[in-house]
Image (cartoon, rainbow, N blue to C red):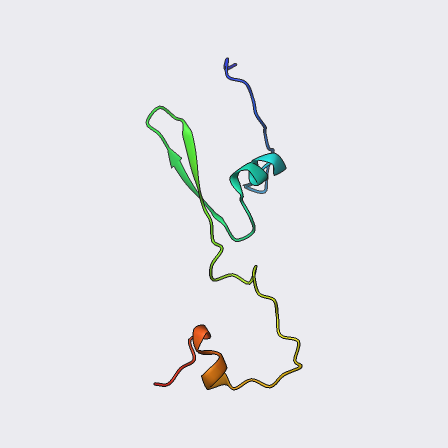
Length: 83
């Protein structure tokens, strides 16, 4: 047994493990984020959080359907533009 204290632990189920809530909050891990895994030469596991806040619908307010839009004028940010 290691002399290091245990901050949290997770059970592996179906080749998946949950990240404890307090660690998700502290590291600001959210849906869509990626975890990059690296095993050091001494066997230590290092995990790097790659936040994926762009290109997701997390900040999308939606369209209520109350106003008409012109796709070529209003939606260029979505990749629709004059060719």
